[in-house]
Image (spheres, rainbow, N blue to C red):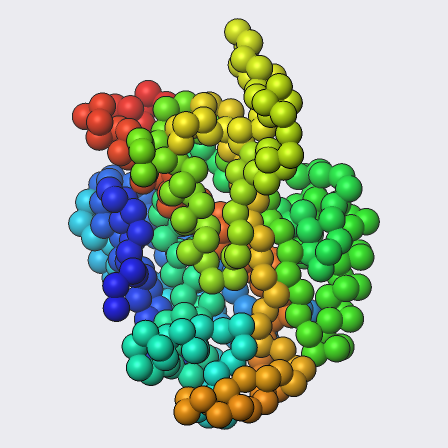
Length: 360
């Protein structure tokens, strides 16, 4: 199975299945001399960990990260870093009903068509559990980005069709839904309660901001920074759309409205979302991701079995009502992994990564 790796210089490969012994990530290309311990992962892994809120799966996983290689005496060595996250609360018997039937909205059908089989135990490789490995890798990426001054933050700007009317980023970390608008959050919570009572699920929109990104990151023509960011975020199973800056709104504007005037002090506006011609312009990078509703729902749906016979399915088990907010640290991690890879590419082209990092 190909397609399990991401990045060119700072490259990660994730492995493992939802109901296996665990999942993990191998990072190749991380510079040496960076302080790294298992405790560094606790905060970010806690943000993605299941079983904490009232609207996510009650599956209990500690998501403790074990560093198995690439670190000696608390510092990265430059060798591949292997991170392992044990799985302790998988309940495979709950999925026996799915052995011969495809779940609508899941990848069961397409995996079966491609590989001739699919892992019906918690979706196996295409389970959202795989994203825990990405979050762990993102922690290492942030260790490189931190000294450079780049910072990635994300928040919920829409959920269940309810959009924020105001944005106060100081409120995000204290919000259960990472929502910057308290009034909107109350409405979102009510919508989630109703969806849960109905056996249904909801989607939403996450906005990511990158502060402190220097101008000049990105490669022509196919490795544009915006193209790689879009691929990174779209590689998350729950994400069905990505826009940068004005995004689709740019299609409704005139050139005179969409262009960002340039002054000696910088750009007057930021409809470009911090990227021009696939290269960062030094302004704030703005990305929005459309997150689909969780496909596992308690409402009867039409489907087929492996032989193509019609069937119906009604899911029962441990499922999220919405991928938000647990998907937020995953999206942030993929943005960090993209940025660190492009930062290291830029430093390699200058042939002095360490000096460039220290200068920043």
